[in-house]
Length: 190
Ligand code: FNR
Image (cartoon, rainbow, N blue to C red; front, side):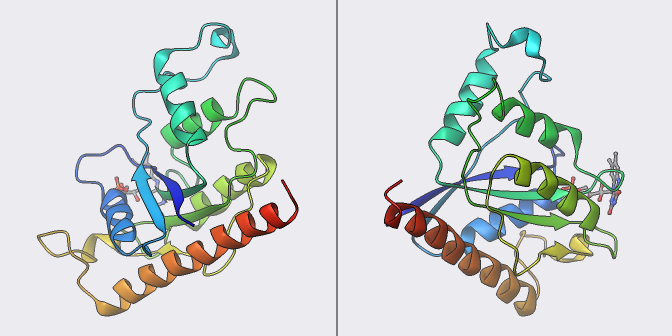
């Protein structure tokens, strides 16, 4: 079968390296993954006060995630943790109580940084939330991408074949993971 993947990009910056990596990952995805970036820059900060009358952007975001079979998170690290906009999007999708759009969706996390440490802190902090949200998160290969400013040429193509091979491996492993989770679920009759 074919699986729809919601791709969340943790940076809102014009010229974001993380978004370039997300685009590269999407380009390297096997044909049975249909990957689309789901934007969240317009989501008002989550507050329970608005659960009764949710902002239109929250409703739009929740419905885009509901349409997905899996979630791929590609994120930079802010202050050794998850960028606030991405955390807000996770929070918006998790509410109201018992209506979380994340429940059961297989996921993968790719972190990136221009520094030599590839966003390990952000990668594992977001995993903590995904565990709570009952999302089976791919464990291998781990993807902490360092020195991402040097990864692309002036046309946003990956410079090194090794980087390309690694990102392709991440996407093929993620496809296996999504198929495993959804396959196990259909065998269980769920
Ligand atoms: C950063 N940056 C950063 N990098 C890192 O490796 N670990 C960190 O903890 C932080 N902390 C941090 C906090 C804030 C508020 C900003 C704005 C930046 C640097 C960050 O990796 C760099 O700006 C990247 O270029 C951000 O990714 P994009 O926007 O290029 O995708």
